[in-house]
Image 1 (spheres, helix red, strand yellow):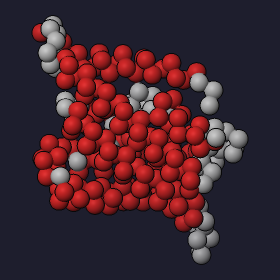
Image 2 (cartoon, helix red, strand yellow):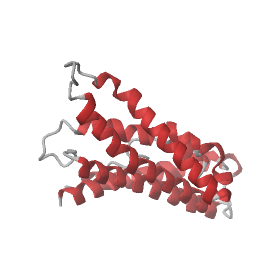
Image 3 (cartoon, rainbow, N blue to C red):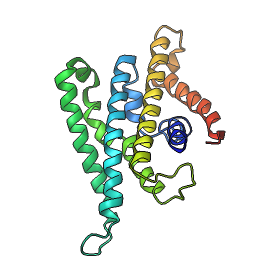
Length: 206
């Protein structure tokens, strides 16, 4: 039940887009088509699910273990997290280019830019903060299993957010939007309304 609570919380309550506004650059740029948004959302989810457990192990087994020399290496976490994320993104990019060239062309520069997606780095840093919480805290990450669940929930939350916005933007292409609001203007309004609607989940006791 704790893992289910963490999963639901990371999807709806602590949504990377609507609660923390992380990863907004690619979120706004790639959300013009549902197909492209789905591809990027799946790629981001996969990178999260792979990198967060690796970063968890680095944080708990290497950096905080004080090594053989008895030195606390936690100050290196930021650099190591980025290195892990960049490495996994390179693998994802090669796989997408090999097996889905049309999706690779649609995503363009935003696929390699997953390496600097704030949502992925933010999830690793949030995970780092949650390791020290009390086990009774619903936000606490107490093991590799909860790190994977948190990564999966964060990825699904980001995926749902970008696919929902892409679906709305596809419909808006046929709508009579005032000229002054066309393009990013109406998109920002929609994102704001979606964020406000997600605030209703903040009161859930999970």
